[in-house]
Length: 245
Image 1 (tube, rainbow, N blue to C red):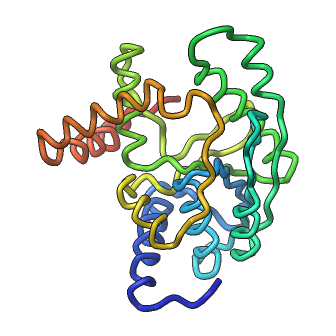
Image 2: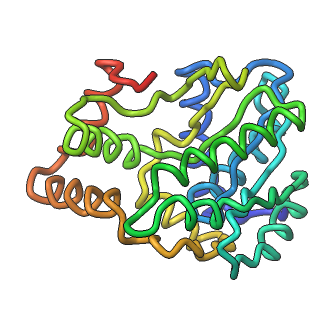
Image 3: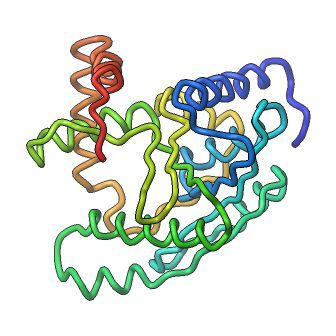
């Protein structure tokens, strides 16, 4: 990794700080862990990759990472620049080809299919992780994601929960960790711009028109009209341990 100027180093140091704090608070990483980092092509997963690749060098518990992108098969998904970034960060990178897009077209003739897609994508990622000898999978969910997931479950399912910072999936024999939960989406956007992360446009035809996008706008509206509301909701989730199991 290239040397950074003092100002840039502060930006990267903040990302390291968030990640390290989450790892310590929730005991996300143990000595000898091999972690599969899911790379969607978006800013969040690339920031997570950047952070974990750097933390390997100085975190007291030694761990290794391997990056993987699950290609859903929608086409127009050029990962060349992500391959270059992984090479620069000295991270092994794999592309897991799937026919998920074709399965979705056959299963659902109209409307969105986000729930089924997420399930199939998670299955493909877990399968790769197990075959690669990993014991953990890292997702790039951040603070805003946790709040939005809570609002989604409340409004559309009549339940009050969000995802957990750490979760063990007994069926897959894998532990999922979310090291970016203390970072906001706004901060990750700034990091993407500062380091010119090679974001790849999501080829999914439903990208940007989902229920989650609606909830994102709703939560932001609530936060604008009630300063600090988003942080209060985030803290309520953590303090109440309102997690999906």
